[in-house]
Image (cartoon, helix red, strand yellow):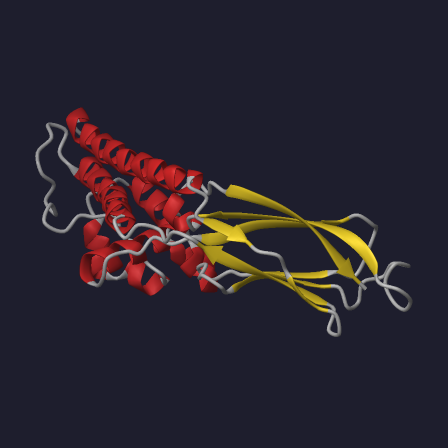
Length: 254
């Protein structure tokens, strides 16, 4: 069994990651409380029967968030390598034979995981630990490997270490649109890219809506209650915390 103090190092890395994560959330909460983002009145195209909502950004996210995010990512990535070292070390805490290369591999295909280079990284683990490391590999998701949390962690870590500062941004995270009258056939689009000032954030297509209030005759005003949420992307916030801004609009839909 490995020396207990080695596992303490793993927890210290995770504690440090949590400190950075908490700092990031405090920064974002203060940002949210300043109401930096809102959605104006929708632009309604009565001929196409489409209502478009545009986002207005009064304050951009801080560039410094990227450094906090990078510290969070690197501590989390390092904790996995520390874990492999702790599990590979001698019972007295001495370094394992592969101390210079042992690490937690994160691979997108089986060939890479089964390669000699990768196997040398986990060679000193017992068979059960090796099986668990294999079980958590992104390649087990096949073509969907890129959405695996560990692959996202690897990409963020590599980007932060070797390329550019990670950039924190805000994205639309949720939406609810209700009408004051029953309607079927409504189609709704929510922006998935980072929010940009003046860009369309959502569109409500009511051209195929089925209700007696739509169609010919005089325009009938229908109350539209549009609720949007925004937050850091889930790969950045790690908690998926959403911050909701509610806006109620009474718009004439015909």
